[in-house]
Image (cartoon, rainbow, N blue to C red):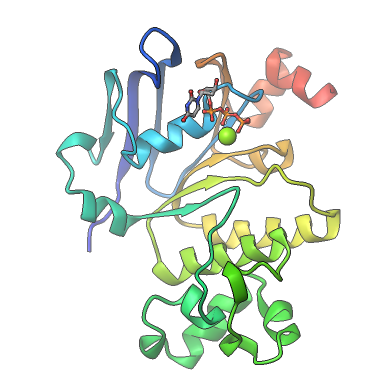
Length: 241
Ligand code: DUT
Ligand code: MG
């Protein structure tokens, strides 16, 4: 199994439409186990960074490296095997909850299943469903709340034991109780793993090793929470809104 040691963006610029740059010379690094949080206004380019890290697109200039190797030279299946994406709008399969979480349900022993459901705070959800883990999710989970669907994708990422977590926090309204539960589940997912996280709630970014404030595709400020608050710049102003 591949071990992730580091990821680095080196002056990455990118445009979906030629002449309309969305990222401008963005640089950052994350060592194994670290979390980098991206914050900033809508349209700043946060999700685009995750798109490039998954190689949905390649940079127009600059480089992305994983373990020092240019992402373009990585085998796409190795990259997929290493990465788990937790998105704003999770897609669930029209299958049982168990199949939605575990790629090979027959190979997940009971202790593992219990551990993952616990860490992802899915136990209440499982108890609520008539057949528990073996409940068939109709229409890709249409009967579940967006918060519940997010917990399921967190469980899925835990089950895959991916080394690089790419996380786009939900913008949709969720009540503060659900938000607290998701927060705890995310904490368990991120612990010990390398993570690039788009934070819409500043509370999620707070504990990151490094926070990048993106503004019109540029890194306007970078540092940890304390450093950025002391700076009294953009990040500080976001907290006062
Ligand atoms: N954009 C495109 N094509 C795409 C995706 C995005 O042209 O397929 C544009 C929209 C926006 C810019 O790129 O002007 C950056 O988009 P991104 O989704 O990266 O912004 P964000 O920081 O993730 O915004 P939000 O907080 O609304 O999710
Ligand atoms: Mg986005």
